[in-house]
Image (cartoon, rainbow, N blue to C red; front, side):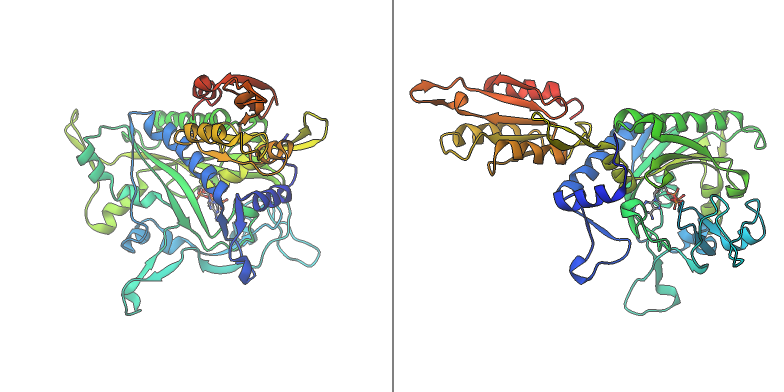
Length: 462
Ligand code: ATP
């Protein structure tokens, strides 16, 4: 059962230290958020799961971390300087963004208007924001004298750093086509739509990969290239389902209509999630042809090519780009994990049912009470576990309340140390502890000597 509304997650996030509205003491700042102690772990775990699937578990993809601020001509070649300056309007209901002039021209189909003659969203007839002419890239100045030549941009995506390093990677890593370069880092967009939590923010993190392959023999009919594009769509969809545990009924693929595609694109499909307000993009998988490498070759005067040993020819590879939003995915994992159900006593409990690999805290060590007799063993157990997994030690309040707290942050396992463990009234302790599982709420007793093995069995992929 996912959370039925965003408010539930927004308030849990703040209460439990996942995500805080930024600069709250100054009245906040629209579309910006800070990640708290648990949010930072959750974000890192999602990023790691992506990196593992895209880089570590494959031998055809390598990583990169390109600089954020770079030569502004990069953004001329990519088309961002010219093409991010449109009269943009956003639908307040479905969040889709349109060019106001294109709506008026009927380029998206039937022109819908309200009684006062205002244009409405071509997708769902929702109210539109006022059109605004602006470039979505943030500008900054490099150096002490602000003039035309000192303007630089904060990156609105991570991909361009990959394209301009294509030759460096081929040469240093001796890569053969097909191969990919992956990168995960922050991007910035001067968004005009008021955000929905971390769904749309000014500063967000992306996980992008550019997969370079042989150019097709027939540009007009790139059969193998389009088949590879389909393969990547399937691979990425499976990742959300199998690695993050997102219910497939709330995931779908949406192929872009011809009118939505850039002139160079051979196709784009979005992986969408059914948010509480409707379907929204999680990841775009674009068949970008050879557009970017060719553009950078033209703008820099340094053609970017790949030497094909077999044909002894220089070719410009074609590219497939799965581009995912890390922070948007974090919101989805929280919505999906949220569950309300009865606890052991039949009272309502809130549980975040994160997959163990995604859960911010893997194990909580809970002495039954604050009694000092319990502390040495509880501390010993804690010190045993924490070098291996993210672990919390908590001895305040009743054990029931501490279970509830751990359930609410999605900790898969609690380890309880009680008087049976340490012994009481002259009876020796059994040197065993109780493992309590978050989802089943079952408890099993395990000797301390076997604790790490028992935990490992219950924390797959961690
Ligand atoms: P949208 O149409 O929702 O603005 P987009 O098509 O512009 O997204 P892409 O350029 O394809 O997005 O970026 C890839 C991914 O980055 C998106 O699928 C989304 O998950 C994430 N993303 C894009 N813009 C933002 C933002 N402002 N805040 C948070 N995540 C974002």
